[in-house]
Length: 111
Image (cartoon, one colour):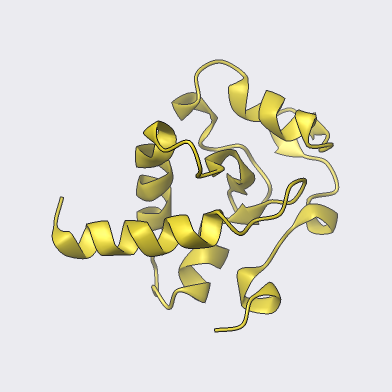
């Protein structure tokens, strides 16, 4: 992993740590906020690598449609369980009323 990737991962983790309890965001929303054009995949890689970091709530990052696309990295249904514990309803691996729970860092955070 290059030092640029590590720096990008750190920036991604800083944003993810700001996602409020009971809210979710998308890989693309984080990439857009950080100015990483086409960086949604990089955000996904960072989330996959974050499971050893206790203070990164990676379960709050989903795809642009509210699908739990990263759930296999949590093992079993752990991602769904964590989101449900925060009050979200999940059906068929998708967040019900996703727009209501969506947190957009570009709207919520000041650059």
